[in-house]
Image 1 (cartoon, one colour):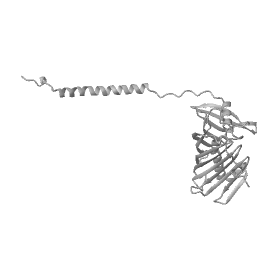
Image 2 (spheres, rainbow, N blue to C red):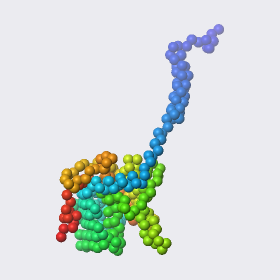
Image 3 (cartoon, rainbow, N blue to C red):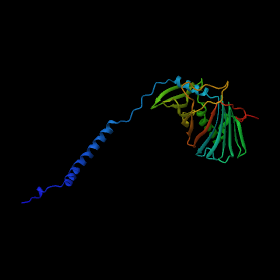
Image 4 (cartoon, rainbow, N blue to C red):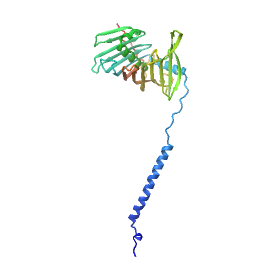
Length: 294
């Protein structure tokens, strides 16, 4: 009698049976290996921050300020939130000469002048050609200009980190703390109150592991954040003119500056994003360049 179970299998049939048995085994094996790999491969933890003192960060900021005695550049600014109602995109130029002379000019994309802001010591001038108006006086009186004063102040803060004007003065005190993977330098000044001299925080600076300032908070007298500034796209500034005024770059390496600065108003009035296209440092900047020539 012929039984079906004794039927002789063909080689092709045998191979099919083996494939059906072996394939699921290999699939399970690959899954197990993959899961084991996920368990063994863990994200590499960042090493702990090196110990840095407040004095070291203060010295570094002063070195960076001293390394630049003048700067000029071209930038594009995007203004949002009504800080500057006459335009949202500005093409601009900046001229700076130590210790505190700055001139900012803004133009429309087709070249019409929008504003000129000149600052030196405690004096300022704000000229608005399209409106035919000129404001000038002591910087302490700028608050009377409303949004125009706010825009001018925020613009000066935005470019200050590029110019290196954020150095700590001798009247200010500092403390450094580790803030996750960054260093935070808290800057204080003293003012007279009913209970005598009171220490008041005016700025916070965040340094990354390269000890570059990547964020800054400007604080008001009430401790609220007036503006938050982000610094990105750090690039090397090439050496410029030589001469008796030329200052050696900072001791730890090439002179780096952020070519992108983003500022957000702490009162929710808007934001400014500045992208620099050219920056030239330690070249001759005269009174005419600074808008001070009569």
